[in-house]
Image 1 (cartoon, rainbow, N blue to C red):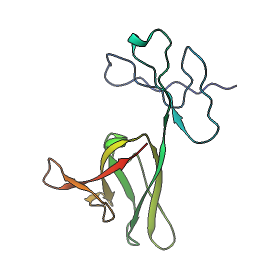
Image 2 (image 1 turned 120 degrees about the vertical axis):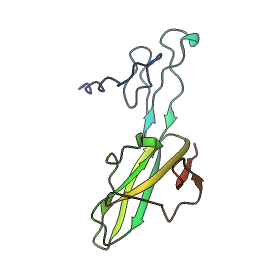
Image 3 (image 1 turned 135 degrees about the vertical axis):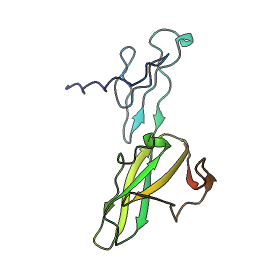
Length: 143
């Protein structure tokens, strides 16, 4: 079995290691998944050495945007550390842009970056004011 390369070190040292996504924990039994995607997290030290928290199922979320004149579209939000180039959407021949992202359950804020300019997601069902005077789309992923 081939091992995945280690993730690059975090830019800020953390008090506790971050959960490993998609990697086998260093100790304890290996999780078994029949289908789908799963996140394995290490339990707190209070649970004993090598304790493994229950797996969290990731949910596939599709982001879509229609703009046949756009040259590039990105979804930018709390799930990708607001990195404006981390999650590009792909364009179909008619001008529909989309991308599938797998996320653990939780609440996320995001916006669209279209040709270098912030845009609202017209299909967002919820919004919340952001500190810049605009509105973020709010996405709730249930488990």
